[in-house]
Length: 128
Image (tube, rainbow, N blue to C red; front, side):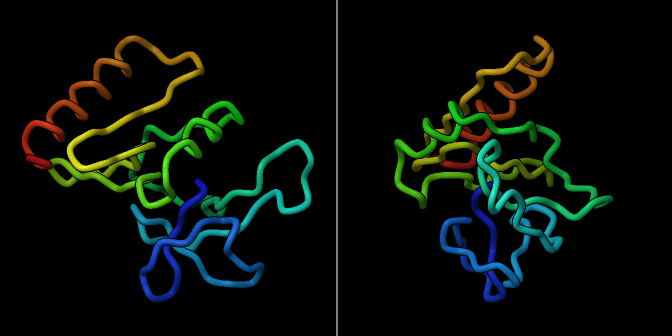
């Protein structure tokens, strides 16, 4: 994840975060750590501490391809939290009543259907 919450509940990108600062998951509110700061192979990102159970079960490793697509949109539209029936999800992009999810890795057909149904319900019922 590249967007977290700071101590005051404001969104902050990992590029603007400082090592040693306290940052929180916008979904489960658990404290995050900053990972891969000096890595050439992995992009610097926020991560849950080992053993933390977050409620967003759509999370997968984010590829460079995925990140570059997200960066085509202003930061305030990236990794926006949407909620349906108490289930929260971090949408790749959410602008008004439009949700965009980027998928470049293999996922099962059932997961695609579940995601599409969730997003369709969100757009038709909560953002109108």
